[in-house]
Image 1 (tube, rainbow, N blue to C red):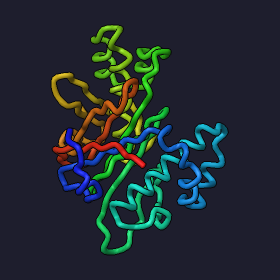
Image 2: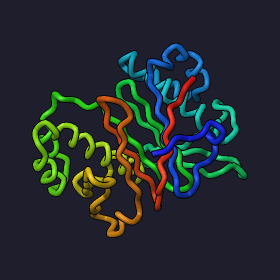
Image 3: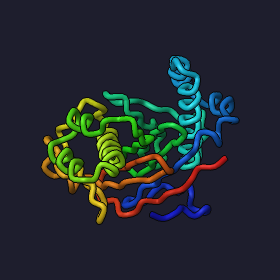
Length: 245
């Protein structure tokens, strides 16, 4: 993992690279009103529908930073960016001719917000706060493939929670990269997590070439959090940077 030099921080990623940005909500909470101003009417409406104030505020900050970040890549005002959504809700940019084609994805959990920016290939990112109050083996039985369940059972009880969240974030990132959401069953594909090498997609029911089609990276964005990013194509370089005000 490398860090983006300041002089290149807004360069569009090369074909073999993905940029991952992290942000921490408490740093940006004082800027809530300014981020809300750059959101579209549809985004403001969605924010207003959150029942909890904390969820509303996190949505506003996460999407306000997204607009600011993409605006820097495209040299456009954040409020002027337009998005459209796919069948399962994955957003993508609506770009004027002449602008570089970039794909992106965002995820947030607790105080951590992650963004992935890639060239033309699809990308998905996920982050989860690791919870120790869950019966992870029971959840795995309900959602994981038999291969993943077997691997999870093979680790020690003290490692099972962190292992579960590594699998979960990989699976979520893959679904987000595909743009399927939960339209593609979690048991219809399998990830593998090996401490000696990068994680990978073992198989997918609808794609015999899935392992060659996607590049997979595990992330450790902050203590107590697990994350993953999955990119279409052969991506050899993950470039990481923390977003600051």
